[in-house]
Image 1 (cartoon, helix red, strand yellow):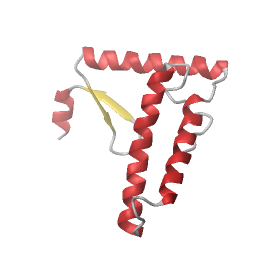
Image 2 (tube, helix red, strand yellow):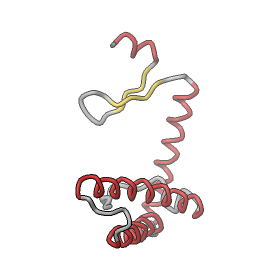
Image 3 (cartoon, rainbow, N blue to C red):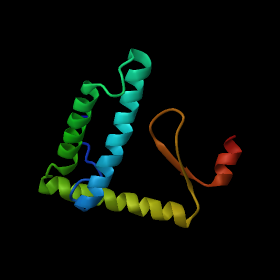
Image 4 (cartoon, rainbow, N blue to C red):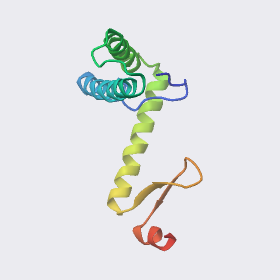
Length: 122
């Protein structure tokens, strides 16, 4: 898992306490590992108890720990805090005004609107 330098995880140490990050790591690890294990079993007939899967699990956990617990520079910490505040602000406004957040059909843009607006389009 590689994230570019311009992508800062919301769950970095600048934002959340360590125990919350450990919970997130366990969830991510379980999700990724289960998908890989089932795919390898179904398509390549790799047994669920194969040693290579255990090695993969250990390496995945190590990589996730590095990703989540790597220290951020001061500028990245302030940027992550600003981004987190923006996310919370948007969430509050959406909840307060009963709006809907959707991804547009033509790309990766988001559209915020009321339920009536979305009903008119369909």
